[in-house]
Length: 190
Image (cartoon, rainbow, N blue to C red; front, side, top):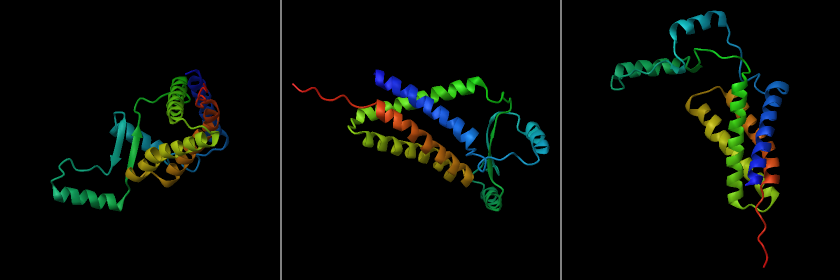
């Protein structure tokens, strides 16, 4: 259990540091997330028309799915565009808030712990197999999260690519350390 705890701390620190490198030094997200054009016009319109925190999509789907004319009009709007999803927090928050950073570290710690537990349960004897396991797990996480959202929610290609690369690289680097720390005990020879 001690190795899992150590691997979890080390894995969380590595992914945490990778986040600063990816966001701050490499600017991995620059092509993926841009400042909103005409924010001085759009933001007041959002405040006036979207009062509650939530996830919003447009064009809005008719509430009566049996109204064929309304569904056809919605489908035409959807096809013509624009379409989108707005992740919106009405109350705002301080930038780089310590609570977000602390919560992020805890998320990475629990993630590294889960990864370490599954790796130990798999009883992978060689470092290469443990590392391959982590790379596959990172690719799996990227696929079911970022690539799936890209497909189903039609998120922009550049966003999905940046988030996928970030997940795979960050967790592969952490995986090097986790794979070195979490190894099965050798069977005792009698």
